[in-house]
Amino acid sequence: MISAFSFIDHLRRIGYSQYAGVPCSFLTSLINYVSGDPALDYIGATSEGEAVGITFGAFLAGRKTVTMCQNSGLGNMVNPLTSLNYPFRVPTLLIITWRGQPEVKDEPQHEQMGRIMHRLLETLEIPWLPFPVSEAEIAKTMEQAEASIEKRKRPFALVLQKGSVAPHALSGRLESESIKTDLRENLSANENERLTRTAAIELILDALAGDEAIIATTGKTGRELFTISDRANHLYVVGGMGTASAIGFGVAHALPKQPVVVIDGDGAALMKLGVLATIGFYQPSNLL
Image 1 (cartoon, rainbow, N blue to C red):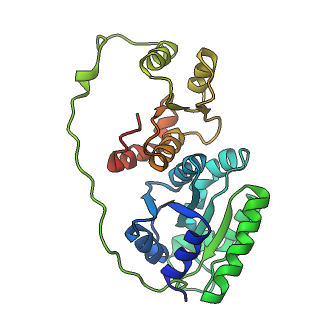
Image 2 (image 1 turned 135 degrees about the vertical axis):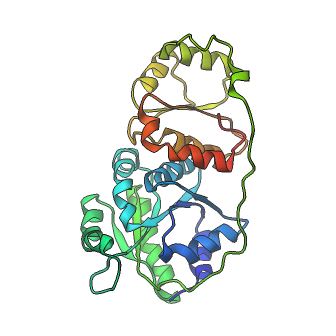
């Protein structure tokens, strides 16, 4: 068993600063430690795929990232891992808990994933190692993980078993303030009028200063933005359907002085509406 401090402090010393994930009881100590350290940044996501999108965006903003989840959420991560991280060579250190470990008493819903998880990671071409269970293993494990990430520029997974990390209490809670507004105050068109997608994109571009990072969702939105005005500060999310807002949030959160605009919708937003709750909680002032 290792302490949360020993592991996270080692990650800090090799450059990791941005964490995102979905809780699991096995991850409690790590999440509690990161959440209580003012020099580190943990974002609680509403789904595992959203967490991958957030760390994808944070990587684009220059951060080294950690994405944490229970293995039951690995299926939710498959789409962004295979259609964003893999083709665009964006690494993240995955910490995935091993629920349903054979010969270990656990809930029945974890049995199959516990049995097939390692094969699934290998099918996804994600190399993995057991999470270190002694202080002496931390440096060696991370040396191998970093070598893989540096060479492949793709995710690497650590599989965490129950009892690997000593308990660590939560030192405080992050609270969010409510914002009251009436969106109708910002409407300039008759509410019965309907814009075409192209016209809406043109109006958005006309209203911007030009220095914003613009992230356009999968499908016609990205294609039409490219056709209207292709710029170096545009990101067209051609994979990871539903993750555009998560990526935009990841960029905005990691670069608080950089204005970021996300053009979402087109059906993709419906796939991961939970990210809107995450954005609403953290309320990044530089994200539109």
